[in-house]
Length: 117
Length: 112
Image (cartoon, rainbow over all chains, first blue to last red; front, side, top):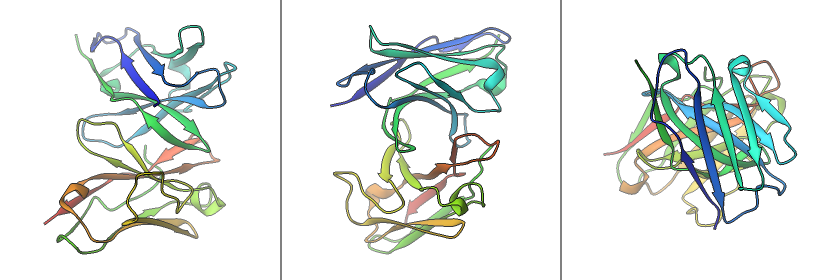
C-alpha cells in the first residue's frame, strides 16, 4: 500500500526558508509518477505548489515559482519542498501527494506549518 | 487563488440526493480537461473520490457520481449518509498562467 508522510518544522520565522520532506513507502519514487506538494491555508481552499517527475523535471505554480524548490532523493525514496522568504501568508497545512493523469491518488496526512516570529 | 468555483455549502437529509457544481472556464474544464473530485474530512488526508470526470477508484461507493459538460462539472451524492459530511473539492488542469493543477473553492456538505 502506498503511503506518504510529511515531516519538517512546524514553526518558521518570517523571511526564513520553509523546508519539508515527504517519505514514500510502498512504491518506488523512481517509477512513472509525479510527486506533488499542495497546501491549504487555514479556512481556505487547496493550492497546488509544484510537482517533480522521477527524472527531476519540475513544474511550479506561477504564483510561487520564484520562491519554491522541489527536489527528489531516489536513494531514500523521498522528495522535498523549500519555500524561501516566507510570510504569514505561507502559513498552511502542507500535503505531499502522488499524481498520475493529472489527479492525486495518494496523499500524506499533512503537516501544519506556521510562519511567526 | 481558486480558479474553479463551487457553492460554499450544500445540505440534505439522510437518503436524499445532493449535487455540487464546479464552474470553470475555457482554459480548464471548457478546454476538455478532465475533472476530479476529492472528499476531505478535517484532520485527514483528502481522498480521491472521482477521477476522469466520472470514474470511481476502488472502494468508493457508487452513491458518488460525476459528470462534465461545457465549462462545468458536477458531483452527485445519492442516498446521503451521515459519513458523507465533509468538504468536497473539484480539480482540473489549466492551460493558462493559473498553473497546471487548479482546484475548486470547496463545498461543505452537511447532513441534516
